[in-house]
Length: 351
Image 1 (cartoon, rainbow, N blue to C red):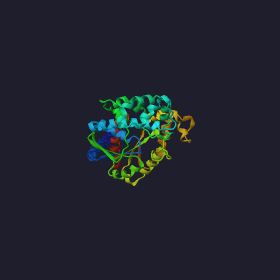
Image 2: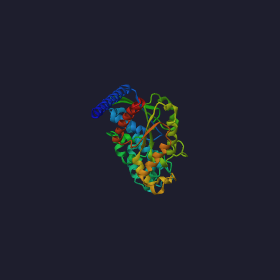
Image 3: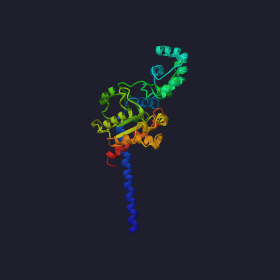
Image 4: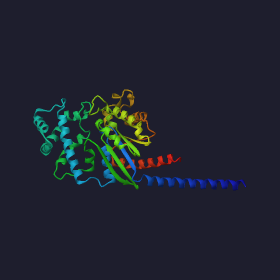
């Protein structure tokens, strides 16, 4: 008799389990239908954290890439990045150019963007100068406002000025153009329409963020790992990492996001962090970081992540170490976002 009862109980539990599974499946399907055309993903972070690069990845992965006019614009941006970066380095007082190359220096300093094709050889030649390479490596210490990809520009300048040049994805990801205003990209992914919103990260641009806060499903905050020794372009007395941490705490505690319980933190530019920490130990900037781990990449990342965790004022945080120029890495994020949306729906429903 006991066996019969036991079998009955097991059968009852099985039925309840099946019923629960169907309820969950039904809820997931309902949530997917409800969120279709309503999922809004907001990219936030300080300037130069990689938001625009991530947005470019999404256009390439989930849309048809870039239009002819956009590609032409990237060509112009890359050319301008190359010329202005070299001019900025040449104006640095620590850069010493040999007498036989001073003419090349003056030619570049006087050049406009239309002159780039005729000064290409001069740029290539001066890039081999020891003092210029040293200035590039110490650009943060010297407060040189040039992109971290400047070495890439100098090494590819001949391609950039070729009459048949068509920027590749790798070129586009490195084209540096300061984001002003608000940029949106809309695309379909797994039957859900995503609206991805990117806004400028400089202090002067942040007042525009308020217009983007409505109906946000999830927020991705990008923080550049390699900026631990850098200062703000608009305020050289402020460390970029400290500014990012302050902004992160301010945003995650904001009442504007009281309905956005999920946050994704991208600890971005890990590729640059790996090379920098070997040259500039983390404890040189943050004395509380253990000296024995000063050049350890994993321990360095862990330390920075913990600092963001301690400044987090939201409900749930999902941190990831990323490289915005890594297409595979950027593809994975939307699997995470989709899981986050469903998980929150289940939690809110009491499952």
